[in-house]
Image (cartoon, rainbow, N blue to C red; front, side):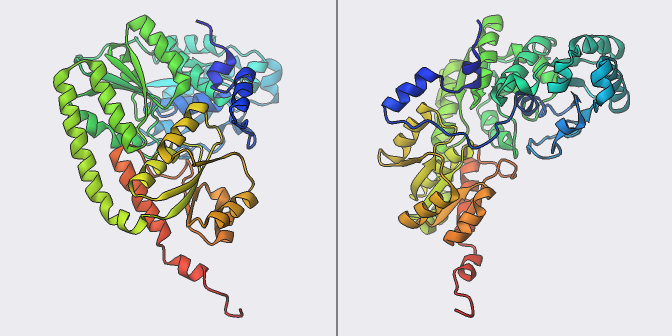
Length: 446
């Protein structure tokens, strides 16, 4: 089934925007330059820990690679290294196909990765370099899987790149190997990239239930486990709309049903566990799941109690478009904090409805505002903390309120029940840091 660019990019089309305007929804204003399709493909595939990633393009496409995404590994670290063919003017004139093939052979000889993913870029695609042919030839020579990823940046938004990466896995990797054994409780986790070790907060819960994660696509994954992902009984998509197309194709080819879930927030992780158990169709598993959820939530409530006593009633502003905002809202609700406003950037209509459900109909869903507007909102509502990226650091200092920095690059996991405890600890540490007493003091000459 052909999918439109708008569907893949998961952005509202013109008709949707008009209907949203009629219902009072304000169109989201872009904050700046969006990431490209090449970035999306890299974000999706780089967490495969034992594979090497070769970029066929200028060295500038490598960007800030080492540790920038924060996808952690329990084994190999070769995925953190970016290899490039370093295309120059002569390659643009005469073609770089031979150069990419030589680079693959040298990479395999020196580093011996389990597999190599080769990415096209704007430059290599514009001059017509055929990376597919180079990958086929290199695979025959090295006996190592060489996978082409055709997702140059000019194709579109990074969500399209994520979708293209899923297509590459489906066409070249999934179904090429078999597991040693299978169980009735084998699942795949799709769209979780183990940023800050998020997946490690969830795997122990599944293990307690007797559920085996056959393949992780792609956080902390090995290449081989993705090869036999077609033998799973269920695909669980974790907050990754662009990979739904991949899951639908796996359902068509391998009869694997899928569900869409989230690990961020107490309600979300509990719902996720329940839905997995229900889809696997074992009544004993469902009963065991309810028991585990009760135990985990009771233990979490006990751990949160000391923080709740100090954080209850505190007023906060959340400016984040990432999944972490859901964990923040869930933790704030459980700690009985007051969320004054939540950012609406990159938020879809169903997300807005979910915010209203969590925070009430009077919740302020904030469209794009300048730092000056944010400062005015903090002062007007007497907010006591700002939760945002470090670009709002000066705004928090002007307002003399603590800033909890939740940049994507920071190594804090907010997934699962353990993630809610981590959120609470950071809220407490930021709000009650002794530095704020000094910041709020008058200068000696005043």
